[in-house]
Length: 263
Length: 324
Image (cartoon, rainbow over all chains, first blue to last red; front, side, top):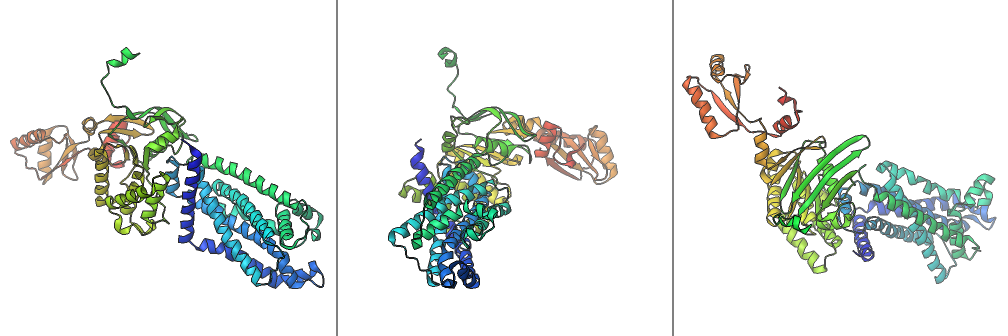
């Protein structure tokens, strides 16, 4: 049996199933866009004036901070969507239909790739909404078409990596509740990075952590692409993080899914 | 080698053959060395109470979970070596509904058609045929979450049939259905068998196995305790009896005197006479009472039920009622 073409057609079938679910149960999808938008408005209009002046000097203020924080907000949107993925995977695994899939001659991984691709579509929707609102409230990137393409590529790579990670977390979770709690750390990481304030302003230990975790180089790379600030090695480091997280998480998820569902 | 096999008549190859199947969950031994052979084209029923291990057998034979030990061939494929070969030949309807609740009935069937890699026209055609055949055409565009228990079970079965399997596992297919829903499922099962599909059915109802199965294996505490046709099994079960009801203690006393050692219930003014329910023995019994001029108030015939099967085959009744 040639498994590769089946893996592709079966994944496409499972993606259609995920998209139908989104259509039938839109509240989760709306949450994916709504949560980061609320964060963005909060940070721009509540903290933005003070933070902008603190970071950008007298010329800073709110206008400066919008541009500073939006790359980070985009990553918050990716993390929030990934958290939702863990919940929907854990919930789906309790459904009888998954047992049916396991007894069918289909490419097994397609059950997971369907979730990953569906979540990427959901995240893309969230990112478009966040970017739209950002532009409305004064986000003014200087990026040209090529840089925008690179932004989309990097966000897609990061979404791909985090989604595989949360698919694995969703499979590893014993209950739907724990599936919604375990990936919570993903929402905390942007705050411990350069997404909201520069890492230089943090105490030494925290600063070291912030500089060596994936959210900081990815935020810096996005800033570089949007505004032409120097990217340096951050671009390569970001892609390495994405590739590493995706590969390890994929192998872990595949292993978890091939366990006996009843033990 | 050829010379040795020539003498055997042309037999159909077994659809399922199992030797020494074992499975434990942690310390708990669920299946303790099971041997089974299911002939192609037959209906085979695995009968047993809750917790006997029926579902675990189905889970293992349908590749959902792995066995700890045992030689298992399903539909001509080695279960451990070629699970995908097994999967391509079987259909499974489990105890808990395996439908996608967020999709409509029609979408559920189309999903199955896509996963069986059917062509565009064929997926439409087969979906329409199954919706019609399972009386779901009217609700085809409604989400499965809105279906009643019977409708859901029918959809579940229809989904199993999309791939045209030659061997179907049905795990307690009528549990939780009302009598009408149960009849419908029985009709469907008979129809499949008539088409030559092999059916492996688990049930906790003796009458269901009796109605449908060519062969029955009784599973208890992870072991097969009896195997045979429904008639063979019933002959082995002494639970059948005739219950005689009397108007007063005097009649009861004289009847007990005539019939000798029979189970007696003074409070209910009743006697229980062992019987396989055939007419000749019934006539003899009544003639004897008539001869002694004992008036019988009422009479009922009790055929063996699952409790009797377990009481006689395992010595452990499933309910207190059967305690001697």
